Amino acid sequence: MAQKRVLMKGNEVIAEAAIRAGCRNYFGYPITPQTEVMHYMAKKMVQIGGNFVQAESEVSAINMVYGAASAGARVMTSSSSPGISLKQEGISYIAGAELPAVVVNIVRAGPGLGGIQPAQGDYFQATKGGGHGDYRNLVIAPASVQELYELTVEAFNLADKYRMLVMILGDGTLGQMMEPVAFRDEEPVVNYEKPWACTGRGDRKEHNTITSIYIDPDVLEKKNLELQEKYKVVEENEVRYEAIGLEDAEIVITAFSTCSRISKNVIRQAAEMGIKVGMIRPITLWPFPSKIIAETAAKSNVKAFLDVELNAGQMVEDVRLAVNGQKPVYFHGRMGGNLPTQKEILDKIVEIHKGGNV
Amino acid sequence: MIDFSVILAGFGGQGILSAGKMAAEAALYEGKEVSWFPSYGPEMRGGTANCSVVISDEPIGSPVINDADVVICLNQPSMEKFEASLKPGGYLIIDSSLIHIQPTRSDINFIAMPASDIASELGNMQFATISMLGCLSKATGCFSRDSFESSLKEVLPERHHNKIPGNLNAFDKGASYAK
Image (cartoon, rainbow over all chains, first blue to last red; front, side):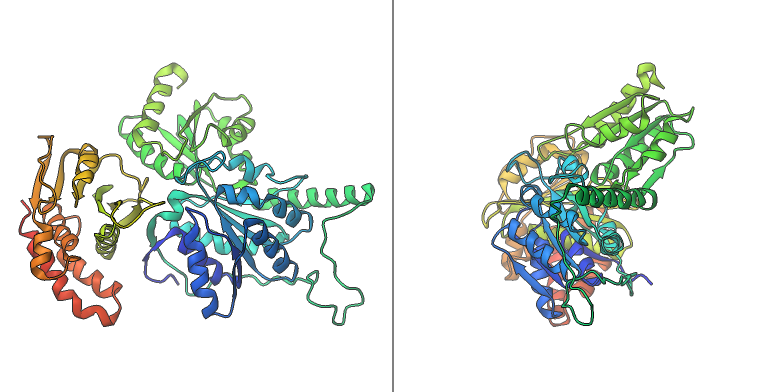
């Protein structure tokens, strides 16, 4: 049962969702535009007997996450772009040690200290590694405050299910905005057994070890192959996306999170002008919804793709790989913390439509 | 109503962000889709503050507003900055107790109301923004007085409910300036 809709800030909803998902351990370090996640956790964790630590740095916070996850606890940290860069060493270690954890990145404009306004310039970092070594994080991109809630709860289940790090990739818009959210009376929390966790040897014959170091090349290669096998299973089972109007679309927009919201309104405006526009919105950025994009590219009604992002063109590379030359893929991006207007995107659509590509 | 957008702007400390939230809460009470987006970052008391509120019957695209239906200003820098953001035919509502310039555009509806004087007379400066919400409601109908009252009852803790009549009084005073 859904409760009545309440008006809440995205950042606060992430924290509330984590608590509802059974997260009782939060370690973080403040940075705009995600600090409200911390504020909320600081206030709530003491009331519910959880652990809140404002660490001395992002590096410290992610290693506290490593520790709590090793003990089998549900644990989260959050930050924004420069802070997430600092956490990358720990993120790679978490991947190597196969620990379940949730990391939230409320992305701001970069590179470097950049600015504090919304951006999607961390797509590459989130989906292609970020830290060292062959590993993957499951990356989820909510597009509304309601989705921030539902997908954060889901993130904890997925992290435990696959023993891997799940990243919630938002941006300054989502984190700072207030929107209505309807909480459920009961959360779909799945309690996974964690026989691998370091909780004291107890009756076990051997003590459990959490590590990411394997000095013997053959042992490490085997470990790597196991990881790749796991990632394959995730790719097969966990791809999520939203598809709109693909049956008769001439132009298909690909956009995630904030850009997908703006694009939805463009679809409506384009329809009024007689241009049929559809959209594929990846909800998981890794695993990426390549299959539906490839299938859509093969359709005769689809003449072109337009990828819209808050960066210089990052996800568009994955879109192009999936389209594989079947149709032209155009790009429109804004940077520095600016958002594209509906008019900008519509103008681009009209231009593509006129260009004889449709 | 699709993507009806309101920008509220003034000095930090005038209650701009809270007023925007109250407008959003009132529209939410009517079952509308709403979004509220603040200026954020290194803000300070006495500096400028603004927020964007979007009210819609449809899911909201961008919470960031490029063309506003209404701009509410509580200081002169805000008016100079945001007058250009209004759609033709939009409403520019200003606190004439604090702003003594005229709009440069003639294609908009201009309402000058002495919001701070109203608040001062009522003995609570927080009523300045409330009176302007009254004007907003009356001039555009983006939310009703009833919804404003009901949402206050819902959102405010019980111990503050004795403050609702005062707020409604300020709201009504502001509404009388709507045209």
